[in-house]
Amino acid sequence: MTEIDALDARILLALDDEPDAALLALAKRLGVSRNTIHARLRRMEEAGLFLGFSQRVSLPTLGHPLTAFISLRIDQSLGTSAEGALGDIPEVIEVHATTGDADLLVTVAARGADDLFRITNAVVRIPGVERSSTAVSLSQPLPRRTRPLIERLAGSQGSRGSRGSQGR
Image 1 (tube, rainbow, N blue to C red):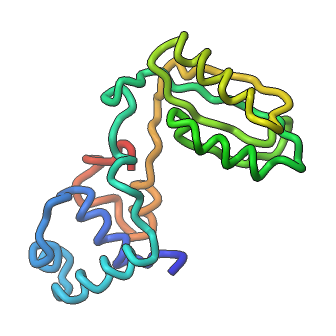
Image 2 (image 1 turned 120 degrees about the vertical axis):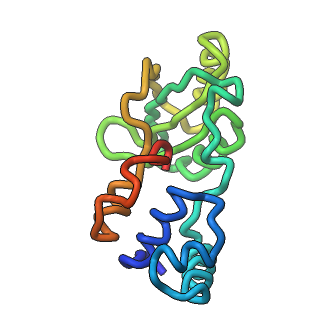
Image 3 (image 1 turned 90 degrees about the vertical axis):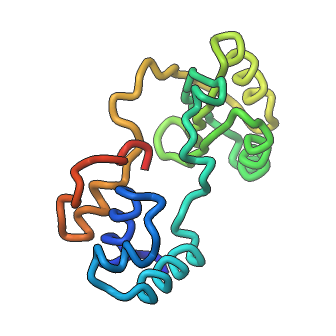
């Protein structure tokens, strides 16, 4: 399963509004059987559609209020090993392979400026890293969100407005 359909999207929106809703309540709300809700949720879970619960925890509550982005140019012959080494640094929370001047865009979470300096040094010591550039996030005016895309797929504007849309 690579994409969800309108009913899957409606189920996700209902769960976004009420994360602890029972299957029967979801079924009544959406006008489908409890078995349909159960089967679709199981199928989406087995397909790996859901991110881990830990991805919903805010970084400041983990003691890491500073977010920074490190652009890396890497030696192409060592790219795979460099990517693996990034995964060994706990503060590296996301890595994207990119086009343009950088090969990788690394998102890191730090406790403060000194911690960011330590993390950046750990990153640039990875074999294959040729050059780096770091940008610190000053604020996040629009957190990562998927609700508007799910609403479009569901063919609605959401049954309860934007409640619960941050970070999803």
